[in-house]
Structures are given as structure tokens and as C-alpha cells.
Figure 1 (spheres, chains in turn orange, purple):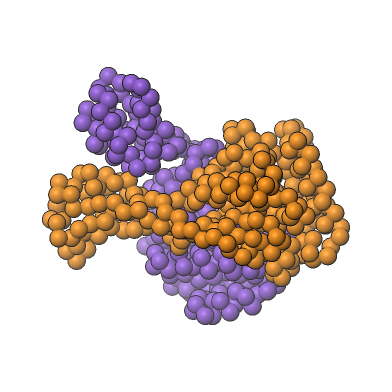
Figure 2: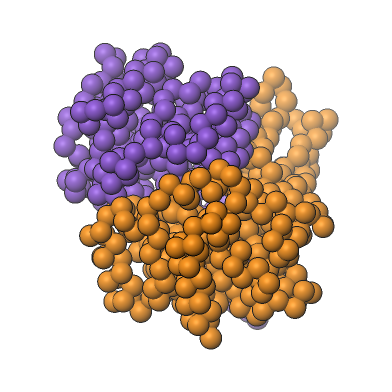
Length: 291
Length: 296
């Protein structure tokens, strides 16, 4: 089984548009996964019909028994996250600040505190409107642990791929280079770095490449908005060659991308054959690189 | 008085950094009467980009940033396993008669260190990133960039450090702009919960709306006042965002039109707030609206 993860470092480079376009072209062969769990947008293009919905529990929260607590403040002094205070005579745990480490429960001389597991979000198995099996998730508002939910999405997409006998998982990754990104890349066969010829896109792509080297994951580049800055576009192409990264295609800076999103459709569905051909070419290169 | 403005968005690439750098320059150029200093803190620590927009600014100071993680003291340890039992993050494991600490999993909560009966896990400094202080070519403007090391999983401890750096750098009557990370989970909340006001940047697409909605719900939960900037206006369906903001009672303090000229300037790392056309005017207006909203 091969796992392709679409990633960018910088947000807004077009990860979701690119993933959706590739999914459209390869619909028969893939399981689609959306690993950008705290701003999951793939479902807006894929109108998935959920076949399974599960609560995802992760992380704990300290809970106080006001009857037992004597407000001795020992927990307050020990908490490294400033999550405990006394308000109107009651001990108060700030849910946003509580890290779930449990130190307060251990130092409390009266056992007035205990930890409770929190619901962090929902995990869905679905069928997308393209007919592909799809795994996606939604982090609860102000919930913690998006990295762990990403790992859940990844694990579930492997099970689904087994079940439907699909050889390829195509995953839309989150922005950045931190915990959720590392979680989405773990176990990847190939990363597709979507970037753009802007100072920010260029800078973030180099950091992404450093992370991929560290994780020893091979990568190919897909340059979006290439016509925006010819000089930087050339620099990125040279960077790919110098660093033994595959180079797939260059897409133009074109209003059609925003328009397609606004209509809730993929680029191949928009009927721009020139762009669809480019995506076909990209998919071919990706598959060849996987072999 | 210190005023902390967070520039946030759920969706990445809507223009947080653009808005942050242009607004910082605009405010530094034309500061409100009661403001002596503008501080721009780049808190998008996974991918900090603000310094790219100030033409290779003079770096005054660069320093390593650390967090505390436990270090095993073999001499003192009696292998009682209290540490691995209390660690909620699986950051401590026993391998035969050795204790392994995994800094990447450690949340720096001190539980193992505090609860070890033999003082065998003292907390030691562990490098997580660096911060740099830049002096761009604007009087009264300082940029503090906070940069996470590659492979470090958690942005949150470095963001806490970034707030400490701000406290040290701020003088009375500072106007502080914080460029937040994208998303709506821990790193974004860490920035917005410490802000006096949150400016949400969005774009007129269903993606922009969907992620704006989650970001707004998140900021409501931490009870911060906010307003919206609509970036790339005209490129999709502005009505989507306008209708939502109306329903939610959120003010749209600026609409920045989609423009090839702006996109190209952005690609080169240039500021656009002073352009001598309708774009420049939009920026002036945005600055004025914000000053009004924040009662400066």
C-alpha cells in the first residue's frame, strides 16, 4: 500500500484544490483522507456521505470536587500552565489552559482532583461523491490534540484501504511543520509539496524539505501560481534539481482555482482541459515516482 | 497602556502575514497619538515569514530558546517507575534498568521531576527554536521573529516564550501586532487567548467561510473581541462572508480587493500599504477603522 501526502508548509498554496483534482482523476484507485483536521475543507468539494461516525477521545482535563477541596493552593503552586485559580471561593480549572498532565491530582493532599478524558472530535468514514472511500475528521471547537486525531485519520484510512482493496491513499495534509504535519507524514511513501513562487512559499518549502529529509520521506514538487514570479519559479525548479526532488508540473496563477472552489467542484470538472491535462501529467509522474 | 492585536484565521494562506506586516508599517508610519512604539511579533513559529517583507532588516539580537525537559540521573534513580506511571504523555519509558526520556513527547509539565522520590529527574534546558530581534527601516518599529527548530513537534512552548520576549521588549504605550499560526487548535489559541483584540482574515470562498466560522467559534469561547478583514475580495463570492458576518454581528473593517499587482508585490516580499492607488486607500481606511474599533 502506498501513501501519498499532499503538503506545503505555507497555507493557501492550493493543497486542497490539488488533492481534489488528483482524486478526481484517480478516483477508481484511491482512498481519500483529509488530515487537515482543524480546518478540514475537503468535504466541501467532495460532499461525502458518512457511513460511520465515531467520537474521538484524547487528552485529559483536571476536575475538582469542591466539597473536598480546602483551597490550600498547593495545586495552584505546582501547575506549570497557570490553569488553576480560585474564583468566588471555588477552585477553578481553566479548560483552555489545562494541559492534562495530572500533576495537580498527585500533589493534592486530599485527593480532591481527578482526571477525566475529553472528547476531542469526530472521525468519519465516508463515500465521497466521486465514489471513493474517504476518511475525514472534525476537531471540536477549542479542543486539543490535533496531532493524535491526524494519526487516527491515517490509521483508519489504512484499514479502509485494506477493506476496499485499494493500493493508494491520497491524503490532504495540514499546513506548518509541527505536530499535525509530522503525524500526517508518518508512514508516507511520497510527499507532494505544493508550493508557490513567493518569498513566503519558497522559505516555507525549504523548511518542509528539511523536515522531509529528517523523516527520510521522498518528495516531488508541484508549483502552483507559477506565472506570479518567473524568477522565483526558476529558483524553485533549480532547488528541486539540486536537492534530488522530483518536479511535476507548473500551474498558472489563474482565477479559475477560486471560482471552482466557490462552486464546490474540482478543476477537472470545471472543464478547463489545459489544466486537467497538467494534473493528469502530475499524477503520472507521482505514480512513476512511487514505483 | 499596551495593546495586543492578534491577526488570525482558520484557513492558511488567507493573508495573515500580509495584513500583519502592512499594518505594522502603516501604524509605525502614522502612529496614533498615544502610541510610542509598534512591536510586530511573528508567532507563526512553524513557518515565520514576516521578516521577508522588510528588505533584509538589521538583526540586533538572535538567541536560542529553550524549554525544560527531565534528564535522567542514573546515580540517584532506584527504578521505582513512579515517573513513567505519572507521565500522561508516554514520554518516559523503562528499558531494562535504564530510563529513557523522549523530549518530543514531553509537555514540560514537571510531573515526573516533581514526583520522583529520589530527585533523579532534574529539569534541564532543551533547545526548541530561536528568536531574533529585527530593526526594520521604520522609526518606532521592532520585529521579533520566533522560529521553531525543524522536527520539534510542539509550537505552544515557543509561543509562550514569544510572549515573555514581548513583555521584555514592550515599553509603555506599545501597540503590539501578533501574527498567529493558521488553524484553530492549540497554537492559534495560545496566541489569541492572550490578545486584547483579534482580527480575523478570510477570503470569499466556501473554504474561507467554513474555516472563519470555526475560528470565530473558538475565539468566542475564549471571549475576545474581534472583527473581520475580507482579503482577495471579488475573487469568489463576497456575499458568503458578508451574510455570515451580519448574522454574527461581526464588523468587516476592511475589504482588500483581489489584484494581480498585490499578488506580484507579495511574491517579491514587498509592502503594499503605500501604493498610490485604490489599494493604498483601502489600507489607510483599514488602519483608521481599526483605530476606531480599538478606541486608539
